[in-house]
Length: 196
Image (cartoon, rainbow, N blue to C red; front, side):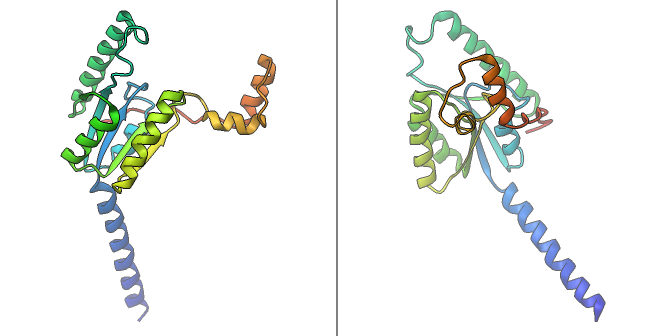
């Protein structure tokens, strides 16, 4: 009798593990590259690696394609960096998809075309980006698409600094260091994926 209970328990656990693996690996994830144009230390990319299919994407936003916002040298550097990112992704068996236009429109079109059910990206703290991201995330969630944002552009999430400072910005470097230390340890670097 005791063996039968253990067998049933084993079957239930095995089914649960298989179900968990199937549900997590059946996703199609779009990784929206923005500032963190790298494979190493990229939690959004690592999160996507458990998916059945990964679509690395960069969207050339017309908001930034204005000479008074982005100069020629900066734009050339961006293009070189995107080329390098694409080369690195190709070594892993993938590639970088470049979209051109308003992210709100281009991402939604790509998501429909590729039947995406999860989007991961690096959170951004700049006002334009926060507004854009809120719009994009609202649209994604309204379609039932899972959204995961990762704070990696700064050592700690900026809201964490604000919460720990109690609304008072530090006026000296020593005060900032005290605030920084109160936020806890910085997360460890993440190794790049070995395949996609």
